[in-house]
Image (cartoon, rainbow, N blue to C red; front, side):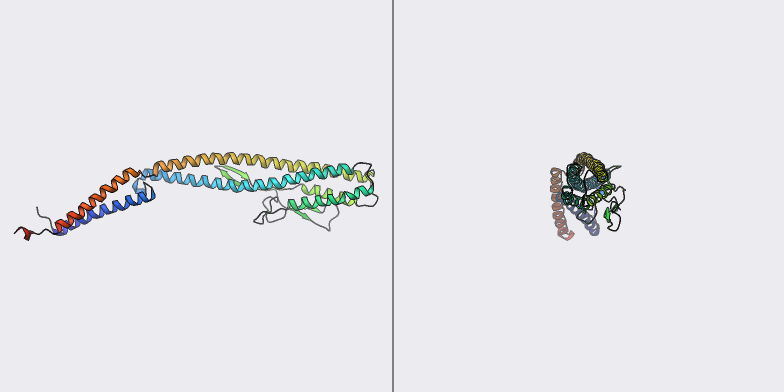
Length: 303
């Protein structure tokens, strides 16, 4: 049977192209260690890998959110814990001031540490993070939570100007955790301190004076209320951190499972690929040799 030269060349070129493309594919697979380079390589497993990749991306976003949230909660807990410690020492000072054996000069000596405490609590409440956001103003992060008005009457100069809204962070499928805190209520203690400091500075002030004693008693109640408020927030922050640590551990296990599944489905079997590469290389070389050999044949050689 005679074959036209053009048909023979087309057939050989097609065979060479198929072998060359297959060699290129296997080489790329071996370079990337991936069995599936295109969805058409394995449509079913390609869909499975796409789903696993989406789930893994979601899990990693949860873990990123948890990492940022953990840092913020830890920082907030530290500041609030320091406030509680300062309140304990301030309350002890007021208990001492309420002792009827104190002279007016003794009460005046307590003014300086109370002023320091007042300023420390005020500036601590208005703490900002490295991005310039206030930690304790609810969602109004660009507004200092506590404001001071020097023109207002003593006992009402401090006010809370933030809000009590919650800024929720997604840490799991349908699970959110509040990232922010508010210190609404702390202004009451600061106003009590302001009034107490002014009273203790009054010449001749004595704890045996009913008016002075009433102010000291109210300030002690203010300390108790503020300690309950802040201590409760510290406890909530600790509980929140325990929850998100447990969630992060669960996400880590899911991530490991996803990665193992992705590897099992998509990883290339190097042994099989090497065998195929060798076979196609041999076939390609044989095709080139045959093409060259037959290309040199001529019917005139048989005459």
